[in-house]
Length: 114
Image 1 (cartoon, helix red, strand yellow):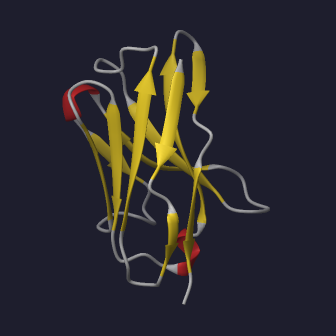
Image 2: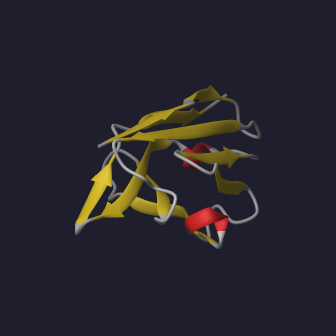
C-alpha cells in the first residue's frame, strides 16, 4: 500500500497550490480520505476529509473557505489551497484508515513566504 503526495513548494502569501495524493495497492473508492499537516515543533493536525465518491467533506476551521478537498473515481485525492498564509507552512500528509491502521504518505512540503 502506498500513498504518494506531490504538488508542494514555495509560494507567496495569497498564492495557490494544488496537492495530489496518489494511492496504490489499495482500493480507496469506498474509504474516507484525509489531509493532515505538521509544522516544526507542533503536533500533526487535521486539515480536510472527504467521503467515498466525494459524498461529504469536512474542514478545519483554519482552512474553511480557502481549501477544497476533492477526489477522482479511482485513486487520487486532491487539496486545492487558495489564499495561502504563512501559517499554512507545513508538511502536508495524505492519510486513510484501512483495516484497523492509519496509513500515511511521506508528505509534501508547503512553504508560504515572501
